[in-house]
Length: 296
Image 1 (cartoon, rainbow, N blue to C red):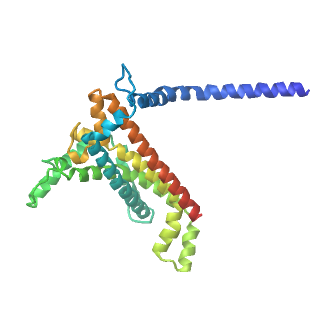
Image 2 (cartoon, rainbow, N blue to C red; image 1 turned 30 degrees about the horizontal axis):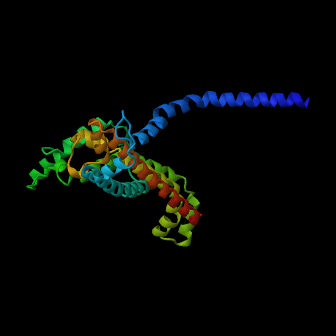
Image 3 (cartoon, rainbow, N blue to C red; image 1 turned 135 degrees about the vertical axis):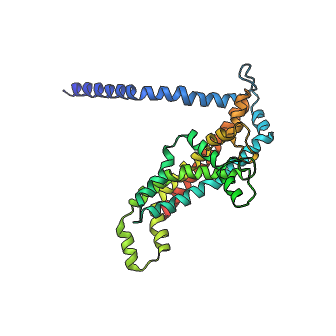
């Protein structure tokens, strides 16, 4: 009897393993073919002198990369833009989420307007903002009406401001939805108790709202960093391969090295960017874990 039960148990485990392989196999194969193997090949190509002879040069590609003035410019611009747009996106979306979470007039319309940029195609976004910020666009027409000297928005240092506005317009709605979900999960009795205890709005904000929004804020930070790298699409469609020096990003550099078939610099730059993003996310994970531990 016991032997029969053991055989039945072994048969069930075998069927379970087969079912796991059957369901996970296609995903694992697809992930390996399209992501993991190309990632390993990219690392390998960053240590060789070319794709065909494949002579190992170790760190020579990375040294040449850091000696490149265009790479340093792209890295500096990307870092500056990320450090500027991410905090602004988090703060503005949080404030707007707190606003539309209140009982205000036309709240539903306001929410819809803030979320609507999420469903607009990138090409339409580019056309819309080019109409506004083109040298002969709406903004300069308005300035001319007020007898103000027009600004060449996309070919001066103002180009950073234009791209920042596009990024915030495109991403605030997504972050707002996340913060709204977090705000609506905060128990109302905590605020009622604070009112009874005489706590002011700043105390309620710091001791209740921010505490319960810690996981949401962390996630919004991560998504904002990722989305800051996606702004390349709009910049590329508006200004092409070589935009103004202030908005020349790492993605421009990698796109141009790909076009010139310089795969060694391309893979080296991509690997460095991946390491930087990983370090930033790791630091945020550690920071979030420490804050959650201290708060709870």
